[in-house]
Length: 212
Image 1 (tube, rainbow, N blue to C red):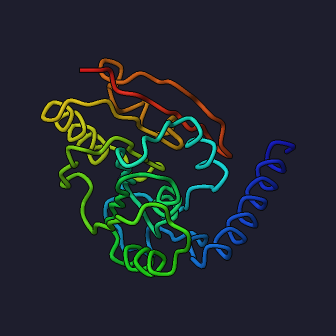
Image 2 (image 1 turned 60 degrees about the horizontal axis):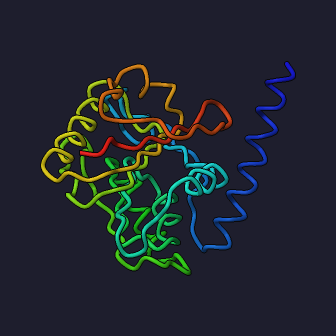
């Protein structure tokens, strides 16, 4: 009962922070959207829940961004919160990949309205993440538990292929990694976990690829 109360209080605080931070940026990303509303027929694709502001900021403090060099990709970018927060840092490019046309349209509106972005090269892609070719220069990959099963497996197969074609070191930030990622993907031979952070109902894990 105590844990349930604590969890509810933490989520309420997160929602209040999100609405305040959205207002400061002139965007709207807070409201959750169920998978039924998005028309997802495949249960492997998850509902829209925005990344907690505090969680994203804490995770990014563990990543050393090389100004004008690193390229950030958010898989399942939704309404664009993580994309816009990343664009407040000196990434060379920021990309959001989203499967839902409804969420993609909202993200486009938010990008047009966003203020004080350091990265001016921001691209929002409407695509099936499992079929999308990962750019050879992508170095920071972000996931907030967007999908599972064969979709997740295919995306990580694409990441491994990208590293084979263009050897480089990448970082992966995975929110709620304990839900599906760590259970379904055999990552040990090419990824090393470098950090782990708590979040409201799971954990955030940060990985780095082994050098080629």
